[in-house]
Image (cartoon, rainbow, N blue to C red; front, top):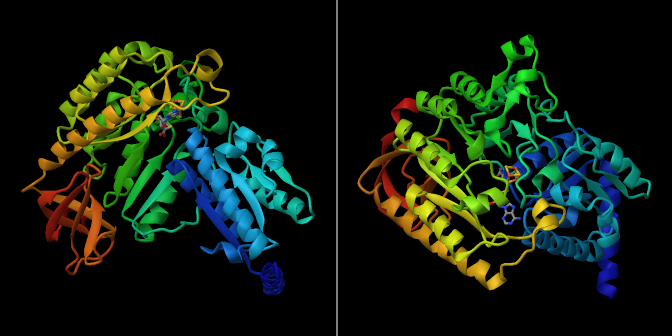
Length: 483
Ligand code: SAH
Ligand code: F3S
């Protein structure tokens, strides 16, 4: 007990000292999708203007922000665990720190968060980050503060993100926010609101800024990038209802990619995530046209059964998806494709499950993100369907899907043995400090001995062998195009 009081006193003294020197410290961490990581960079930028510097050290933070995910129950439980950790640090070492929750859980739970988690002072939804300075003044005056208003306009296009924990090589640029698709299992339309596209000019400027700072790869980010459509901002309109002027000056996703790829010919361009129903051939043609748009598509499908796809409100059949895959492979033969799958959606039968495995065999994905169904409060599936597949069945089917994907990934990697591929050096290999790690065009990780190469170099790597997820090789020179 005495020890705690001692530490508390030290903490208070430290807080006073910081106040005197007028530097405030922000600890910010993110869970969930890439968009959350990108949003945290926007938040760090907003708070930098308020005199906050980021810290990696909870014990010295004046403000702790956690950007949260609601996509599955497990994601929410992880965040609850983190809040317990903050509680412990606050009690023992940092009594004056304030704690805020951002992101999808903030939006979903709203002020209920304050009742459920006493540690929380501040609750801010994904469209209200510009209000954080005002909300903080309320918190400083001793009140809890909540803003979870969703916007039809906000894209944060006017904010230059502070790159957090950056490798200086790869970065995200967010291009759309929200989602209008209403898949019945998905909480995102409720937590992130309606879909909006960001001004292409501000996207080009951000890309240019990254290029001038030496970045080599950008990922254009949205819940559903293929439905990007700019004609002046606000909610997406029915194209037929747009004015002539709006139609003439509109920019769709294929055009946006073309603009970015043309403006930054020496930067790699990636994008995520594509939705099969919105992915058009002109997007694939644009990819084929530009060397610097990576030949990689993340194309979630969720299920291979038409009956389940319909219940999920996915707007395509398994056959339409196969046709899309055929078209992609025809236009870009060396394409890398990855999937998202959900097993155990309500009413899923063994037959439906087999359809999923059969679709996977057809596509032969390079990689996958696979989950068992987690019922989310407020979604159509939760309101209208019974979560009737027993957990052990969901898990067994998930294992089938994972096993099949692992076999296919391994087989796909084997095709690179003996080949030379272009790799962008992104980081040191986790397993060996004498090796670099990076990805090829198809988003596959490759490692090789460092030699004289540096972070950010494009290197030709000859592949000698592979593990289940990684290519292993040796550098044979710089990759010519990028020099
Ligand atoms: N378009 C989005 C998809 C967001 S959710 C994107 O940018 O990635 C990511 C993945 O989580 C989905 O593709 C789906 O496979 C999975 N997912 C979403 N809701 C889920 C739920 N209720 N249970 C299990 N998995 C879910
Ligand atoms: Fe969710 Fe479907 Fe949109 S998975 S993010 S509602 S495309």
